[in-house]
Length: 293
Image (cartoon, rainbow, N blue to C red):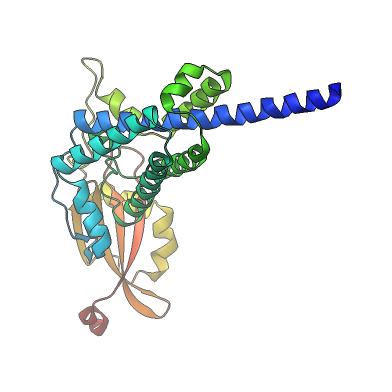
């Protein structure tokens, strides 16, 4: 009898810990949504025209629409208010519709962030308003995936966010603290926020889109990169066909031959002060270019 009571008590304790961990997910999601809402309302994104071409290539209609939606103060405020409403709903309601809406919102955000990283390397995700102005990196994508997984885990949580706070279970506090630390580590916006609070006299950091970047610097970055080494033998000319700059990137288009076909290789070279990167893009050669070659 004592053994059965002990086993039953252990199972109850285990279920209580799992439930507490699920409730911590609700609290984390509410905190993130409310923080995103506040950031969008407080920190304005720089006004930019939403282009329909990148790297000289027309954007797919879906990506162009997503990019266009990101631009404009009105849309940013609307998104922020929606996130705020969803965050408050998580704090006050445990209805399954609220949890499903949260999961769908984070899943959609993960898709958008992933597409922006691949299709629009020159813009930020705008996840936290003007603090998310830098290009989308791996950390932002990993953060979106993490939050989507958290939202899925929270589907079975029995308590609201406020109930989780009132519960005060040690597991809730521990899980929330660990996940919050992971969220902070995956958030480049913290650096931007700290940059806004620089001490007087500190050297201001020039935004990459306004930073003077000599062409010689771009060539040096390109030729020292692994991306250039990978395609150097395929490039048909040392002189680019075209060079232009958009925001934080300078683009260099070279004629090349890959897999027996004439193509155009466009190298996007970052104009940032530090940690400059190079991204190659393969573009189908224009008919007149093919004829000339």
